[in-house]
Length: 97
Image (cartoon, rainbow, N blue to C red; front, side, top):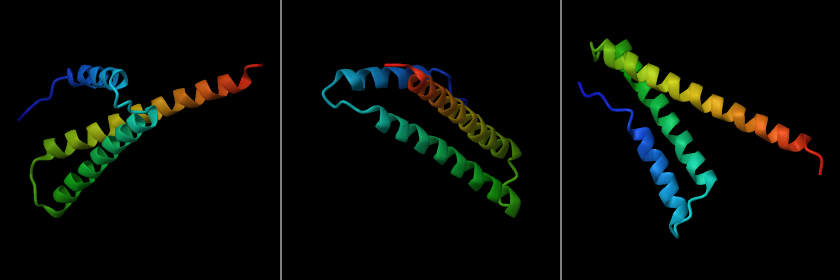
């Protein structure tokens, strides 16, 4: 069993910083779309493992539960970021010019 380290988060931050400094200029919308696509991929993977377990094609309940938890945590984080963005937008809209 392979355990991924948390250091991948640091790699994501460095890629974002590097991409904004280069001539490629990835927009915030592109970064957000890629992040949402990754969350969707985790959800699809979790559904696939659930289907394998339901049909009896796998006995590895640990793999199924890990995929489900990854998808759940990613979705919770995404919703948290969305809520923060909406709060910031509402606060900006309340500002008087």
